[in-house]
Image (cartoon, rainbow, N blue to C red; front, side):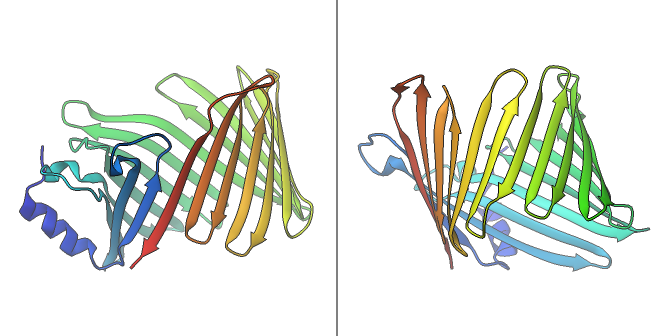
Length: 265
């Protein structure tokens, strides 16, 4: 299935209700021309039909090509409405050029009962409708603290886990338990500018995340995983830089760097 020029222009016209956003990402490596740049343009919009809210958008590769059908990186639509104390929504996305296969997310939230349910599925020609993951989140307030219980189940590999969260003041604790492993993450805000979050798993894996807030729109987050990698994400307004340094003991591998800039017209 391919987009024709007319259908693509019609889609642009519908989505142009929102302001387009241009993102340019620089890939690490050596390139003979501008292949190292990955520009993309995103459009979006929304409308209301009675008590039904509709949102839509398209993410395009902004590059010169003779194949219009290769431009859309993703096309998505979302419909939502409220009834009987529930806020329900369904979102479908066609991604990675697979225009005959849709990823679907269905969510329902009940604020009064502090309960949320989510279903992830796929639908396509020949494959029908297949549910891949289901989960639910239930929240409780207890003596100034908030507790959440989030059971999740993956139908593809028939595996599930439970995430239990606890937050109070400047401390957050998250415990993830499955039949194969358990992990604990403790996030502690030290002051207005610094937050640390160590994670320990039963299988021996550990990691440490440090977030340093530089300003309202700027922060640096460093994640250290011994014998794996050091990741640094620097956000500065519309700029995002990611640095990945693989490590194995005392050996340091090749550094991967990507830089992304968002421009809203």
